Length: 436
Image (cartoon, rainbow, N blue to C red; front, side, top):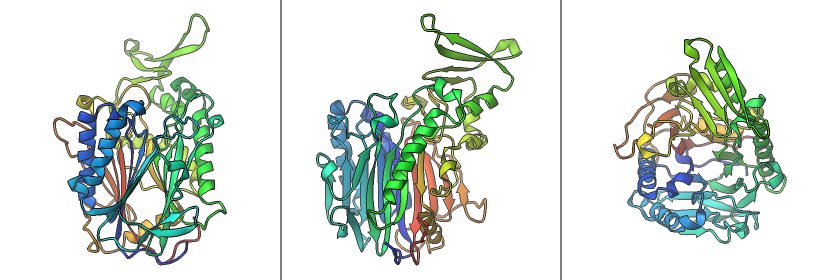
């Protein structure tokens, strides 16, 4: 839909979080996560809030059902959300259907002050007014207010049972239409395989799946609109290049299985210094001796190896990253600032947007911050377009989660906590842009 945007300064908050571990330890991780989520909402006070969750319900969905229900009830009725009088919740709970189950959960909250908001019915091909609070789960595949697909098995044949796919909804604020896509792409099944080539074979699988989603949301079935794609992309650093850089002067020892002669471990040792072990690499082990490399200066030195998005440089845009890799932080609440030694740290959780969606945000950044619920002002300028702020706020002693990191384009903000990546912006435009 082309046309006038929402009223200048309409505050939109986009949040993505892989929440699988929250349901394994609801008493600790879930409570701490909700507290931080509520703080983000309180800070930015959006009119329209979208929360995209992946691995919703955890690894054992059936055993976590009671925790899932409690989590949803808390989000819908908690005091922190009382100003949001309309909501739509879409939960893929059909774990018994391996052909369709994606474990995605999409939450949309509308502030009581927000007027003229509607949601697209993909079957009737028209917008409908949003009233009340509704939850959809068992009937998700037949719900006309969204499109849901699980990626075909042949996209990732190495994984016998994958839950990767996407959910798409479309919204209209005033006359400004935009798609919100919750996505979960394929992971790296083996560090050893990822290390073999540059780019890795897994990178190619993710490119294929993401390309399919982008083609799907701009095909001829519906009128084109701006789109935001945010979720767990599982984007990884170029493993071969990272290892070569971290272990430039190291010698490599190869360990093979006695029965199959298959490579099962790589050990990189310093040439001198008593041949100190720098890195050990196995299928599910990435044990580098100095994790500070991934945290120093927010991991800026590693961004040159973050290459997967470059394939879509003409189709997807992203605010500058100014926080350390968001994965894989320890799931032990007493070690929240440490990375697990299972994978090379990477920026897996992203909030991406089409060229026209970027224009909505950047134009909205010039809007007055006094319209609607107030937003926190930026604190420092790094360039003429993006304002970036890195702040470290220690959470409570019981939480010990990594501190938030923020990048902003005036009022447009991008934040990352553990399992919580955020973009906050004010959306406005005179016309939707022709390049979607």
